[in-house]
Image 1 (cartoon, rainbow, N blue to C red):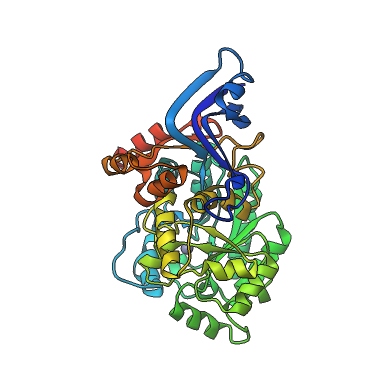
Image 2 (image 1 turned 120 degrees about the vertical axis):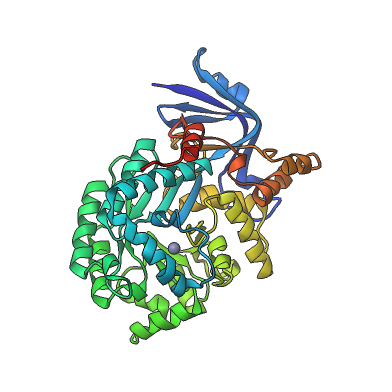
Length: 443
Ligand SMILES: [Zn+2]
């Protein structure tokens, strides 16, 4: 079995940091190493100690003085929107109709879906993201393209076919029965195949009839190990429209609750304008609110209120939400998260940012035994970060005197250029992903 020692300044979390001085929440090895065998972490610690556990002829990837962390995790984005990032001038509902529902129609073409899926996975890798949860288009072929591209790279990806049976163009609508049948077949084909996991994906209450949400309820009940994902309370016009379509529901959250969709595997995009009652329901059902800061700013949707989630004991995660999100980079995402919370009068420490991108998001997915930290037995999904990758960063780093400062510089000034290497199940992937991303497509 192939063995590799990945050497550098190793940082991995063991708990959620309770403040900037909570050093018990993380482990840091100034001259550290991760010993990888057969795609899994065997040991993490001081280089001298870990070196002794490997064979004499083990290969060493020496990344000093760069930081070595668990691969980053993105809990919400849309693979068919890869070429729709930066679509100008509209808020959510107009943006969907004007740009997104046009773009997603292209994914009935399997060649197009495959080409975009390849670029999408390479873009994630280039940005240090090794696991993500994505919506595909309504076309089952787009799901095949997505998981095929992930499997070719050994990535642990989660995703599913979007279900929509109203308030969308004809070409993007399924029916309740078709959505059910296609989802069921895709689950049978992909869920649990290698590292692939399926997410049952009714887009949101506006684009699903009560009959489709009933079918979604059946899918969730019949497939208890699948994830579920949808959108909730992103934009005020959206809330008014959704609740008008379900007048019997107490509020937007209650629409999904009535159809049995809220559980610990449910990822709810945005959750910006929730009442206390709704947040209490999320806490009670252990559903996860997904904070997408670049998207929320880009569409002018609003400011996520983290402290209300924390006070209510509700779970939350972070995500890019490409293509309303403006970057594939989780570093840039946490930069915007910091600013959004700042506008709310809330603080996000650099340790908490890096916890959220790694172990925090892994816990939101219930995958902390496999990803998000560098414990023995974890998948060797690893990112190597260069805090001086850009001239302005290198210049700023000359005055940094602590790890906290370095992490904050990385999140505030960093992007894909700071990702020096990415290992997916122990294999170095960054150079290949970046090189391919520069080749223009001819087809
Ligand atoms: Zn979204």
